[in-house]
Image (tube, rainbow, N blue to C red; front, top):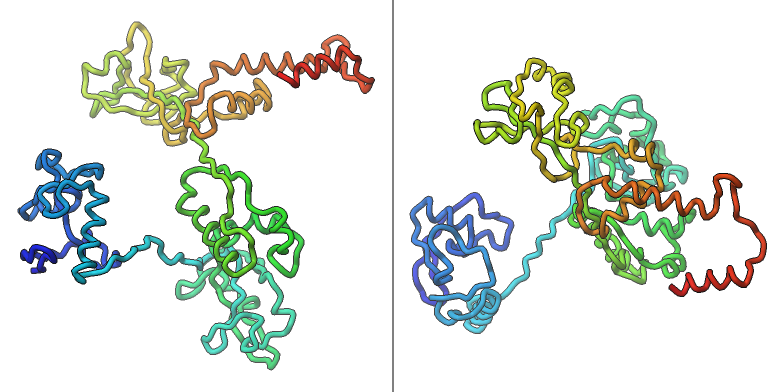
Length: 430
């Protein structure tokens, strides 16, 4: 048992695999009424569950909402969760029973890969002791001290012996001679993708500098990236690494700023309108969408290119996949109607629209402008070509301002008339 620090009550100690040993001290105070995993654990082992949420806790599931008032909990009764946590910490410190501590969720990032692709490390080994290539301990000729260390040309990318990377197979690159003729071995691991992607924007400021990654005058002039547009999936990868990289370089005195990006915009996804067919479970018979409730059916995504609106081309469907060659169909008013669902545009759902087809029909400018008219960049929206004709007509009308179908190009370099200037300035004012 463990003793409750305030009430002195005996609390049973349980060992569970879902508690992470590396989190905090490896021991946690379980609150079954407020945590799903604790609740399931307590229910499974018939551990008494103390209700600290009053009427909000029904006994069926934990209360995941943290915007609640604590009840039945001594001196924190009536407080919200945040205030109660602060009060408990203050009381523990006042009674000298414990101290508050910040648990960081960051972990050390693995920085080596056992693969060919990637920047080689400028490291050599002498008697299994690593040295940077420009260290006195390496004692390398000046030609071998130059950065960057470049990858050798290889014919195959198979792993090296004992789990090493492919570079371990390239012996004429792997083994080098020092100034005394002794043989040293290069590091065979390579750097991860984020070794370069974490600071490429800094290198763009001074790309031809052969001494520094970027001159301080250049980084002071160009400063941070003004606008970064990228998907939310980068939040725990590229963006995190870039911030760490920038802050480290700032702390070392190489940069005047400690944040890489001034503004971040997460673009939304273009969704696709998928088409579904309904197969009677355990058979190879398909029923039209309006009849599916009469049977136990399985939903199957079908290629949107063999569907006209919502009507399935049955013969194309039979040719689409071998297992559907002998498929049977129960039609609805002579038609095989598909179900529709809006979801992520993906090959897995067979709802991908080939942009080349749009470009071939309307041109790249229409395609680009129509994408902008779909809605704000941050918003996810379904792909729909209903309005693309209007955008195409607008661009053709705009083009006729400069190019007459009969006369050809009508733009001149002549000085604008007073009337033309008046029209121009009225337009600018608007």
